[in-house]
Image (tube, rainbow, N blue to C red; front, side, top):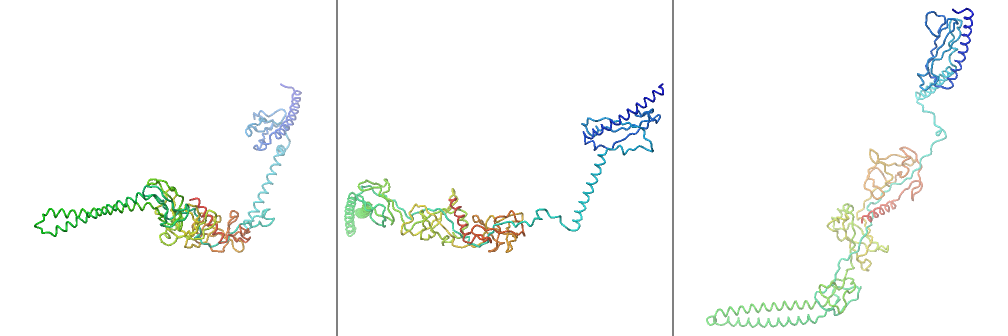
Amino acid sequence: MALPGQIRSETEKDKGMGTENMTNDSMAGDNMENKNPENENLETMKIEITEAGDAGTGNAGANPLTGVRRIEAPDAADHEAGDQESGRERIESPRLAGPGPDIERLRPKKRRKRNRAGALVALVTIAVVAYFANLLLNGQSAPPSMGAQTGEQPAPSVVLNVVASVDLATEHEYIGRVESIQSVQLRPQISGQIAEVHFKEGSTVKAGQLLFTIDARQYQATVDLRKADLDRAEAGYDRARKYYERLKATDSRSVPASDLDTAQSDVLQGKASVDQAKAALRLAQIDLGYTKIAAPIAGRIGGALFTKGNLVSPAGGPLAHIVQIDPVRVAFALPDRDYLDALVAFESPENVYRATVRLSNGEEYPVTGARDFEENIMDERTGTMMVHLRFQNAEGLLVPGAMVRVTTRPVDSHVAIVIPQESVLSDAQGDYIYVVDAGNVTHQRRVTLGAEEGALREVASGLSTGERIVVYGLQSIRPEMKVTPLASAGAPAGGAGLSPTAVSSTVTSSSGSSSERKN
């Protein structure tokens, strides 16, 4: 049993320790808040106030001698796994006089400040939402952006082209070769020695002009021999015929029938011998004629491959070469697509193309060609059809074998509207373009396209000549937008675009390049 003095000293000691513990716990709480700000998000602190002096409560935190109230805080480790300050904090303070404890004084000041700041942010948010909702309900748009407040955006710049109607029956250019209509290689028909050469090499010769002479003495002797054989055959035939006539005039009783039959047979054999001799004479005369070699056609003869004194024979090769130079043909390979496009025209015997030729030195041949004929099969290797044109060549400018450029233009014209390929756009509904009116405002226009013509495209419907369309700058425009026209190549700022001549030139150059590649 403790003495009263001991109890009083212990009470004072407990009071001192309680005051010290409260001071230490307050400092520890401040340190915890400074070290770990996330502890501010913990649940509301539970304060356990234990009344000292409650008899029989069994509360281990109560001090029945000193009358001290004990305050306990929850463990913060359940909210923060890494918190090193976990544990129960005990704060003991003297019993307070009055109807109840002053708990508000024990709440942290930072929590009260945070709550006030959160309420202020919530009020501001509600005010902003209410403001924009009011604008939407009243049919007003949002406040203009900073870029819009500085002024209107400039109209996008585009390049325009004026729609033109041109003749799509344009010129096409192909690579052709000059061919002679007739060409002859002079070969000897008999064997013999060349006695004379009667032409100047490289000259123009006429049909029937004597060119070579072969030694004819042997062949002349053969002719004379065959003439003698003919004379002998005729004499025998005449004798047999006279004898037969005499037997026929004699009395049949005095002439045996066998003699009459023999005489008749001799007549027939004599006649056959005459015919045989005549044929042999003609052969000899033909061989004699082969000793003189003349030009079968008119044209230009090349060099003499055998000259005087050379022994020639039919197996020895040609003596010279003659080609016809007036008129001549020009053959070129027409692509299968172009041929099929003009198939109806080819069925007619009339001219399909108005054809001209450009020589290898760049000069244009002054004579227009005429249709000659087309081959009857397509070349399976190149997919082309050989077409032949006939040209008069009085001056000899078209040399057989030479390469030329053939320019063809269909006889029948085909006028249509064409636009640059770059101006055409497509979507799920089809093809369309942008048309610009007089006020420089764009309008979307649906069009029906036709065939391609190089870098241009034929328009079957949807456009009229003189309208302006957008060629470049399509990515920055939309329908009903004002634009700023820029000058296109060879056009003023109003967007004059390509003229019909320029369009025709574009079609011609594009088609010609394609034809050259195919050939």
